[in-house]
Image 1 (cartoon, rainbow, N blue to C red):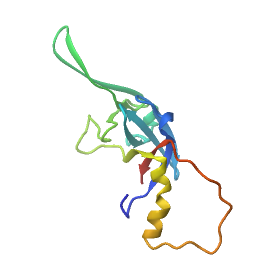
Image 2 (cartoon, rainbow, N blue to C red; image 1 turned 120 degrees about the vertical axis):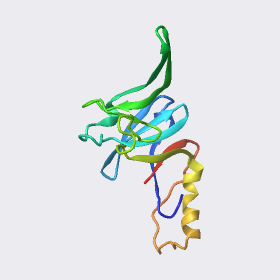
Image 3 (spheres, rainbow, N blue to C red; image 1 turned 180 degrees about the vertical axis):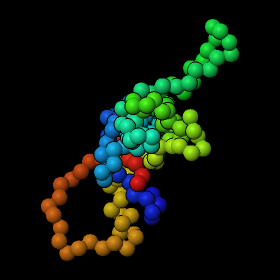
Length: 153
């Protein structure tokens, strides 16, 4: 994690199985988080055209054909189509396919992190020079055995 970015836990890994998605609220932003064959991607849940709920739209791929009776379906489930006006965006990059030079949806880096790595953040803060205050709350032991999906803001 770089100094200018911070991460936010948005789900347990089991909540977003391969091919699945989840819409989350983070600091007043609606964000769609997608699991594409074990890779996680996150995009703003607002179409840049008219603000429609982009992540509630149909997911599809592209069809390629070399002639009648022959076709190939590429990148199944990796494109979002806004439910309001059907504008399409690549979930992996946020880029549109109708105006790739000018139109895109905001994307966020997303990844899977072990719970133990999240608990190690306190050690990183101490190494960065932060000091604990004189008071502490009652604490309980925590086991970090699951994996979590995080996004970078």
